Image 1: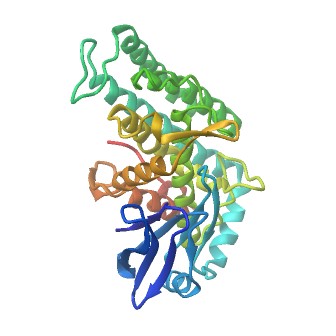
Image 2: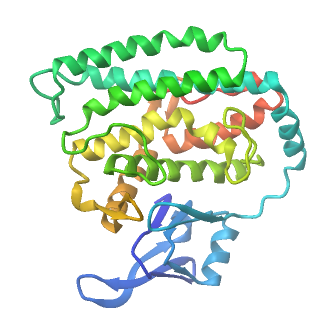
Image 3: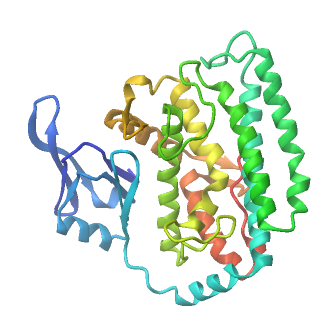
Length: 351
């Protein structure tokens, strides 16, 4: 149980010995009782909703075990972290500040990030294209008609043609332009594999305007904040970005580190949730001008997200069995090494 997710409103987390006790209302009996007992040794991180209460002893025990706590609002907005103390990376931080101001370093690293994201977008579309036929789907997948499949194939070829332009880019702004164009074209093709009852015309974020955007935004927020925690844990300043310019109010390095994961984690997960009917219209609710996952929808999303993050696979790029979560943490480790030798940073690539 690497991640403990407490999504039910008004739960209380207390410490009892070396275990966390989660108190809340049992929906079957309508009584307040202990819903779960969780040994601390089984916990790597805690994700909880804004109305969940944590006792001071429980919080201290979590921090003492170097277990980060992340708090989310009802709409998926990240409210903040409780992070274990990390104050022994001063020299690394100085080196990171120097490197962030080095235009050659920024261009090299940003080029690798954009290349990896583009490669993964193309690979996702190749897999989806190969797994569909005009007449029917494979393994229960919805069918995609011939004209849409032709459009997807054209997009794959178009994406393939961008690699040469990325390699010869002279500025980060050029790279951002290619990344934006590639993502827009990729989403057009990707959306053709969604069930008809969940249309997706474009990305909308603040607020998300339909269930598909709600899932993409929610998943992006979760993985983004995992990257923030990993950056802190390995002595990096997650606010100092390269491809994403450093700005007040966001963790730009974390955004850089998750770019290559978006197609194979966030978007692939959203597609699976809708295609396999894990989520339906009853799992969303309108609020504040947007569409958001409700409590039950968030519970189902978290469960599938965690399974995907912890599922082991044989990685061709690292040549051993690993998980997406291990690879996400490894991005922070490699980025830190790349402060001295840029060749040591290799963004995540799907098989």
